[in-house]
Length: 460
Ligand SMILES: Cc1cc2nc3c(=O)[nH]c(=O)nc-3n(C[C@H](O)[C@H](O)[C@H](O)COP(=O)(O)OP(=O)(O)OC[C@H]3O[C@@H](n4cnc5c(N)ncnc54)[C@H](O)[C@@H]3O)c2cc1C
Image 1 (cartoon, helix red, strand yellow):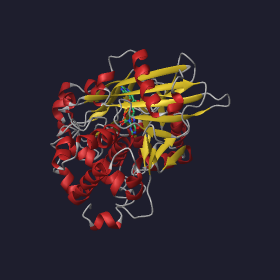
Image 2 (image 1 turned 90 degrees about the vertical axis):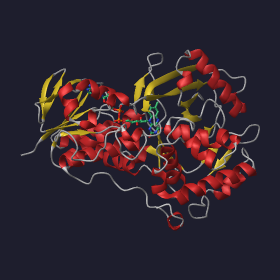
Image 3 (image 1 turned 135 degrees about the vertical axis):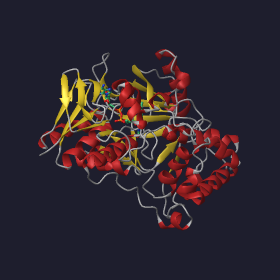
Image 4 (image 1 turned 180 degrees about the vertical axis):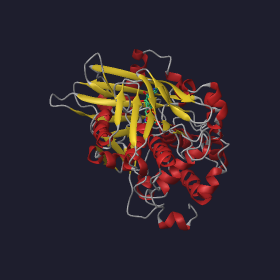
């Protein structure tokens, strides 16, 4: 007999879990409160223009092995465009380009890094020194830093203030959604170890060529073909717990009985779905109120002419962290998207002020934009974008390992302890792990293999 497995939440964690449940031969029923899939990584219809816009540019990196497997399973890999190089604004000069060269990892960026002009040689030497320290400490040494900030690590490595301002800060805040002085060192070190040092493809940037919501279109058919279903516009109101096991969930459309439940809703939502006896019975649910959030701000800008020809730009030392080129249409109108991570200080600003600040950064980075005004804009504040990846937070993130807590309740979501910070990769990993715990199957896929050079130097 096939068993019915209820999956709560149609973000990446929920979709990943549902697909694995289907592959295991069970019946996935995915319940999503909104009328669309994707959760925080999705698109919306701008009421001002009718355009479909992403809530924010989402970047996948080459080291995101599980997310890439998800895209492959769904059949959308060809909708991701890859960039192995990153462009760093350096006005009044042309932007600097960082890209892997001929040398093997971990020296693959050495050539282009040496040629970059926005930081001088002493800063480069200091940055290289810290990179070597991150290789030599290995993955195990990284764990020893989980209770301290990345700033403490940078200070121990005697990093000059300018190296922090121009290099470390923008990379770390973009990847971890917290600045170097707040983020747990182990999260930031992971970004460099796995993204930049271990494998030449690890830091490649993948960008969807269609609105994010379109990436999930095939999911419904995949689940349907397996005898499952997606219930959009249906809210879970509570998880039914009989004192021993979960019997199903109460939804706005009635009771949904299930042999097991995989929760893939955000931690604050889950807290509302659990009764006190359930929270007392399952220690994974004890600390749900302890997690905090960090915001991200995305700003869509439209110009009647092309102002930026590069696919993206990193803005070192500026309030705006990244600019993405979303394309120019037949009439010559260009769509840019600006991203500000760890955007706590921007949350109380009105849209005009936000746009004015972003335009100042755009004009600093791209002389072509000087004197030009956008013909349209739309800012999107995501106040609860990610959990705050502060030192020690992994102690209160529930594990995705099986065998803990109420036997047929499984937890997924980027906030679970997946070994990753709050990212699409972390979400998919948690979904795969939860499905494996619930119904068996392959679970989380391995990381990119570590190249010989960094392995010999002690990275793993
Ligand atoms: C602005 C922004 C930019 C980001 N940029 C990046 C990036 O560049 N790269 C990257 O890797 N990550 C990025 N992230 C993080 C990434 O989006 C998330 O880590 C990931 O999408 C989380 O997926 P999830 O499935 O865990 O949670 P969610 O996406 O939050 O999914 C949870 C789902 O549960 C649903 N739900 C909630 N309550 C109920 C209920 N009661 N009943 C039914 N359904 C319910 C929600 O509607 C939602 O669809 C960004 C996030 C934001 C907000």
